[in-house]
Image (spheres, rainbow, N blue to C red):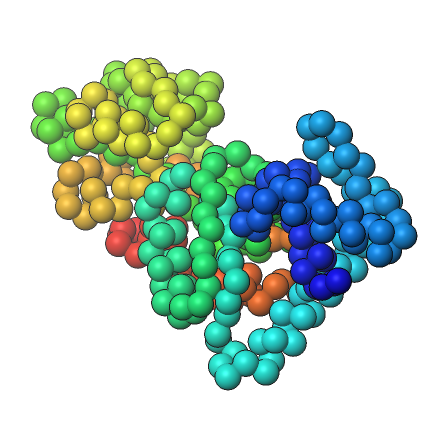
Length: 304
């Protein structure tokens, strides 16, 4: 039996809590995955998984084996990298998850650059706006905006992301430029669900003081794109994260409102499965992120 191959399959099954999901990730049929796990259990003489009609979970023995198998696979990948013709050469599949706002704007450029550096590497991208730890999500690395709490993962802070208050130039031409935050209440406001849910905008003044002002929500959406379209269509004033609106600002299609005030910046983290060291693919992408953080966070083309 190919133990390393069996370990990889078992690891993916545990991380996805599903035979079928692991099979999709690995490009195998579900019967093949099930057969390999059963052969692994027979070889080890231990039951590794509890199987139900909806999911699979590691037994106590399976959880112990998972930890050792994970380290063994990481060690094998490092050993392979250490003798390759070029240490920068990576292969296999790099699985990454990210919010829609980053995944639809700045992240693809970074992934293209990453694959250019490592042509043998395949890229698998999952976009969602919920927080799921990378082991459950079945990815090598997940980029998340906002609070991440604690869990069975390692988090590396990438920086902070700005959310900008914006309007279309035509809207400002018709309604006039805003000079004080209290003027926002007189304008329809366009926001993403969960942000300013108390109908109040929390700003920071030029002197660093907190300023809280009421708003009047005209549009509430669960995705940045309709928010952008509504602001561009001059339906009101909106708030967007820097990465999704940098091009529109550069082209003059959107203009910042109340520029001397700022919304509180939001932390951005890269999170990945626990272990003594990140996998080679993850480590290489983290290094690229460290060099290109401004691009990811939308700061490269927006003046402070």
